[in-house]
Length: 101
Image (cartoon, rainbow, N blue to C red; front, side, top):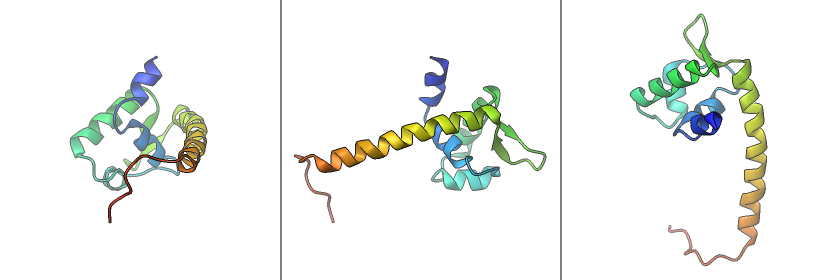
């Protein structure tokens, strides 16, 4: 349950996702996360470091640890499922109003 609590926090999954290709400094990571506030990003990075999923490299950039990379690889299954789910939703007739201009 601890993992669900951690990954259920706002921005945690996004940070792990954005670090999937390698280390990022604080500002570039913030920009990739749609400019989330500095205080929230710092708090989430601290949580991820405390849970051993993220570490800072010698240059000060943030990167996934081996456990963090494992978590990312597990999340890829969720992404594949999400793609199938979205495709199924697209095939279903919808009572939803059409998107605006």
